[in-house]
Image (tube, rainbow, N blue to C red; front, side, top):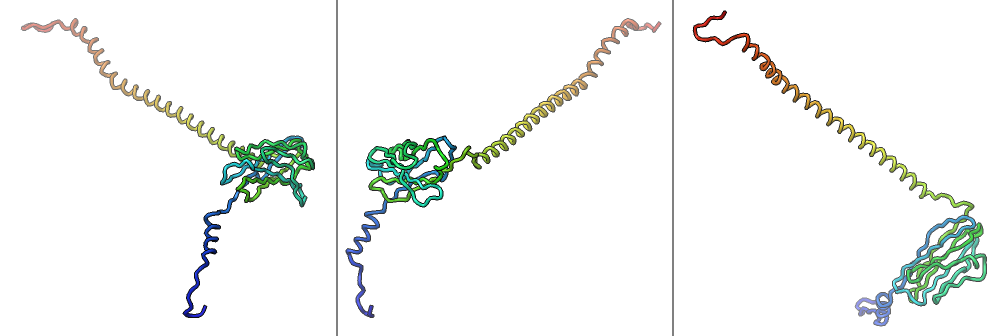
Length: 234
């Protein structure tokens, strides 16, 4: 711009478009949640949980789509779809007779159950949710591991160890307080006995003196007749 030239202002149309894009039409983003990993044993069943958060009310046009990518595979295939209030199981692949819909859109739940697990089911499952007009967002993935016997998870073992340690500590504290309580009761009983013995020693001499006085008085009375004026001892 040449010196002294008037400064140009932004175009009103551009300003209006910018305002509408930032304020009037904010971007919608749906958020989908699944577990990171699930474990199952051969022949058993497993639930693949899927939930979501949306800024919109649950729409009648809400849809859930599950895709599966086998372990070591490069392509994902669709195995389940829910739309217009109806679940649809794809009639291809090994899951067509083993998938059960257990979700509830009103509770924002799009979970499914896979029955009769097999080693070939190992892989990654992706849950995708659309809640028009809230249709923009990332999917969520959960990895399934199938074993002959489901291994004990590290968290369960750690929790059991911590629980056992806490139980031992509580037991030791309980025994300590029981022993301390018994010892204090015994000390209190001994203190009461000592106090009673000391009181008995303090009162015993007075009683003996009174008894001796009562025993001597009759002897003095019989052995020493009363003296009258002018009489001498025999």
